[in-house]
Length: 427
Image (tube, rainbow, N blue to C red; front, side, top):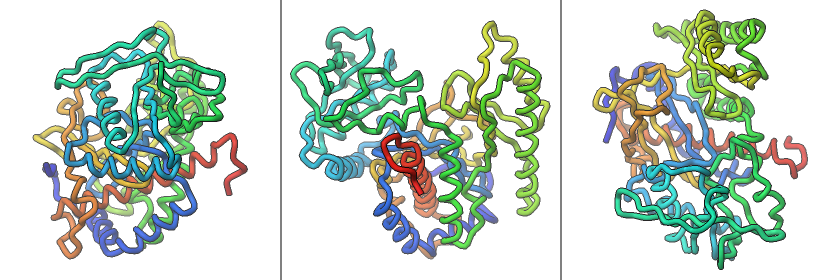
């Protein structure tokens, strides 16, 4: 399904699409050379926002759920990418253990686990689901609404390996972002491949580190395209640890918000954009407790402080990221929509639109009430139509989405190299 746009794509984004199509051989060569030097994340998902004048990633997930949102037509791409990824890491791989989120009773989430199990089974692996949830003491089978079922088995720890009963995996795939911290059962596994690595988890990862890396990638891609990197990059400010229940904490956040808004206003003026700029404030460590707040002026900071102060237990000091807000001009049946691109190894394997009928075009759509519509990535991200008028071809737009999403994935590879505790300093 192709989304209905409230306004036709015009101005900078059309020019960007044209430059992306004209530069396709150079773009693909650039990515090939980058992947000779850097290792892509095992899998990833990138949330994009298309404002009509700007297309930018706003979040990169290195432990993506939602694989059940990909259509069956996309499955062959995912299977081929899984084969390539496993072959690079462990060619002799036979057994794969998937570790899901703890305390996860959602049948929607478990359908995602079933899809991952299906993908890796079709890639030629024996796959079991091992839970590290202390509440799971014996295997349990959960029936899903679509007729599938999933069996969760308790993980057993040996001296240097983990597995489940009568199953010794050589590779462990994490589908949990470990935002509550890394449990000891996953540490010191020197004889098994752990994917993604533990330093990709929110226990150590920071959004600001990712977007610093993405800023560098966007500059390089912008230079290749002969385009302003701002058209694909959301500006940001890292606030550091801030206690929003204190006046000094609110003042510090207000200063950062105003500074970033001033930068965005200058860019809007440069491009003749009439929209009112905004920023989003979110936890730098990916924690879900704080949520995401949209702000258009410093008064919004005071409102956020009052809301947090009204809680019985204020959150205390928290690392905060202020990021340029990017509108989403895309709609499906009048509901606000944003594309999410899924990748495995260095390949785009699918995607979908996250839609929310109750949210505005400047709000976070990853909230209760959201739903999903598949994107036609199985064909169009690989088969753009050069020569077609910019803005008129969905395959061209989807190819552009894939380019920007892969740029974010490349930034994630830089980020993981920088934060690898076992690597030498990354230059």
